[in-house]
Length: 159
Picture 1 (spheres, one colour):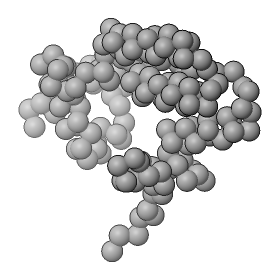
Picture 2 (cartoon, helix red, strand yellow):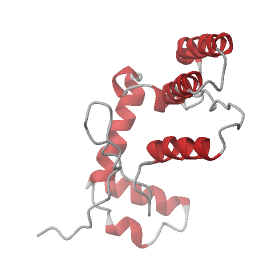
Picture 3 (tube, rainbow, N blue to C red):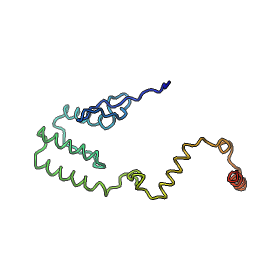
């Protein structure tokens, strides 16, 4: 019988009718992304004359959110069409330039199959090692001298 506590899921319903399903923030109804989106709308209702502020354009999600904000600003007449066109052109440029950015480490941007064979092999070895139970003898006491370390290595490789 499984007694693990079920993690609350985001309650946002997407345009396609499906629930988001991401983990909800603690004490919140939404995941981080949808909490920010709902909070932004709430703040805009409370302060309709607040200046138009774009998020930092660091990934595809932030660019998509910025496009959403421009569209809403046009519909609510908070930004004129000429300015909206300029902003949308800048967002298009940012979207095209995403492949040239490196805001995240290369390992996070690349899919495992795109990694070099040496890195893929290292990742596979690390994953296997993480799944192995710890070697109790190794955890007890480290060798005191380099000679003892060499003896320990020799005996463990012959075992």
